[in-house]
Image (tube, rainbow, N blue to C red):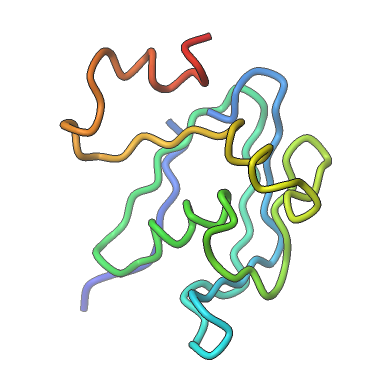
Length: 119
């Protein structure tokens, strides 16, 4: 039997930024079953993170939770001691970056894209 668990490979939180998820449960709609249950993660400042896993293991759901694009019905995501559910969506989304595995989505170096707004 294959292991379909979601694995985090600590490969950025960005300098001085700390991110954590506490008992996070996520679903795509209030009428649907959870796609992630009681997920815990802690990313230290400056640590780089790659999200790896089998098809259907929750990689996209895990990533979308940072952007509040899914229903986080339990738990919370905290960035620099700020619960992201308290931030306006435009503020939150303007300060996060994600790099997908499909290379044709971006032009230029990955290093440039990995650092928010090229800084």
